[in-house]
Structure formats: C-alpha cells, structure tokens
Image (cartoon, rainbow, N blue to C red; front, top):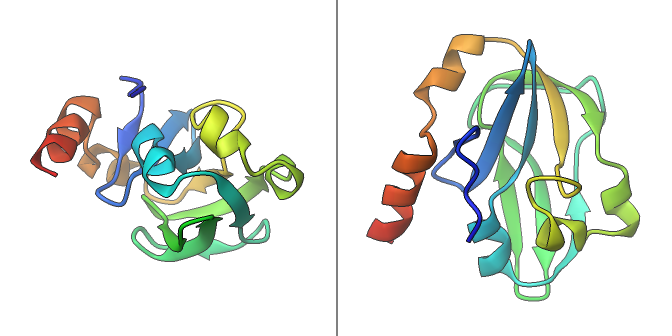
Length: 127
C-alpha cells in the first residue's frame, strides 16, 4: 500500500497535498483498494465552497457508493475532468492522475489538524 509522507489524511481516507495556498484532494490507496474497481466519481462544480468535514461528492464502485468528505475548508478551483471518462485512474494512480479536486485553502491552519502519514498508518492498523 502506497502512503506518501508529504500528504495529510483524514479518518475517511481522503488525502490532501498542499501546494502554496492551494491543495489537491483525492482518496487514499487504502480507500480505493477497499472499494474495488471505481465505476463513477461524482464531483462538485468549480467555485463551490465547503467547510472541513462537509460532503463534496461520491465515489461509486462495483461494490458500493461512498460519500467523499472535504478534509479542510476550501473553494473548488479545479475538478479532475478526466475521471468522468476514466474513473479507474483513482484505482491505478490515486496520488497522481487519480486526484479529484484542487481547492483554495480558506483556513490553511486546518491542515495542521489532519493526521500525517505516520498517524494515518496507525489509524489503519487499529482497523
């Protein structure tokens, strides 16, 4: 299981990579593995704002439909439109081409409250 150390994670298995005053959001390798083959990703429109913890979309696999929760407060700047035609990129490359959103951070300090890779791994081991 891939677990990049430069990311922050949530208990709902969403990752966040900070890039200046913006961040990229996706689901973890663990999440995509648990879901199985991704068949559809429903993501919000650009310009939509969310508070941390608020539902921003869904990911549908052959097994189930799961809600996606925003890791921190932010406004959607870009949506990975490639996922409309190739949702399995989430399975193949969850931390690269399988990213979901680029957001503008509304409260950058919230990032520090998210688990780092060590804490996330500990969470996974507790199961």
